[in-house]
View (tube, rainbow, N blue to C red):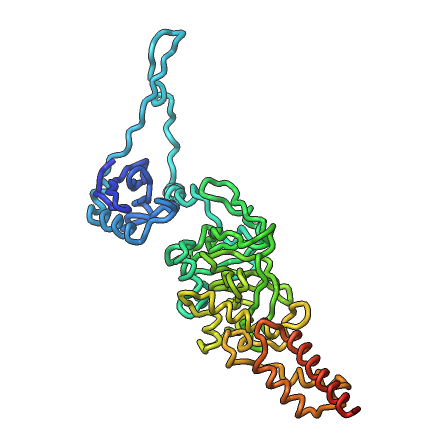
Length: 435
């Protein structure tokens, strides 16, 4: 092997050399073939890199150093590389009692190839590095939903930046790609670097990264993401979440997602089925973490933009920031928002159908509606109350009660308590007049 120079790889100097096998030149870094050169078809392009080398991907810097070292050596020096000698095999014939050399004299002269056959054969050998490696593409699995890595997860970071900081993706090809959502059993169609099937979790959905690179089939290369399930028992998420849609015309809602995947710490990605069967993807920057007066393990999810949800939550107004702003103790923002949302719950912990983002931003001074009108209308249907009080009087009592309400109580509890109080006042009035 002819030595061309040394390359620094993660603090270790590795020797870069070139060997010749037939008409093909192979570049070896350390003990690993990293690229090839075929003078018949590559002209002045001195190297085509093999993929899946050096822990799956050579960094751009290392690639540049290799290319520069080869170009410094020059094409003529590469072409002067002596071919590897074939080793003779010594076989001892025990019966005959002597050694003999076998191999060379038994070989037949290869048939002459025409120029087209030779070029095709050399081209096949040039791309053999790609054929040797395991390559997964979107042609191998069915992607249920895609999220652009550039979608803003918080006011500071995109989804790609979040996953990169968590060590889940690396390189511009992944950061500039997309997050793909697949059914868990689809991972069986993917192979690891040893050619073995990738096993998914027991959750309904899994996540993959759809890179900007394309495979031999012309489709984007995919890689399974190492995101564990955020679960308590079986495949059910630990918490019920409040969720804000990308479409501001849709009310906020509450419910369990089908799958929740942990990015890092308390940060998660939630996946569920939409109204029309489409897959919806949500991001929660943090959770409530428990303690006195704290819900504990509750998420506040903001929907990420997908091909099925193009109406992005616009701007970075106060409400949006409460849902997506990164705080040093971000759980407090989540807790305040979660408690505000609970104020709009009805029976059986069902949220109000009209609850909007403003009703769950953690700021009591911003609201879509305060339910005073709804409560007044409800109370005026009570004949005992309507018989003793005018609507204006009832409204005054409801407004005073709403300003001084117990924030731990739900809307239904508030309405029930105020109705009982006003009924009692009506009964007292009836008793006084009866004397």
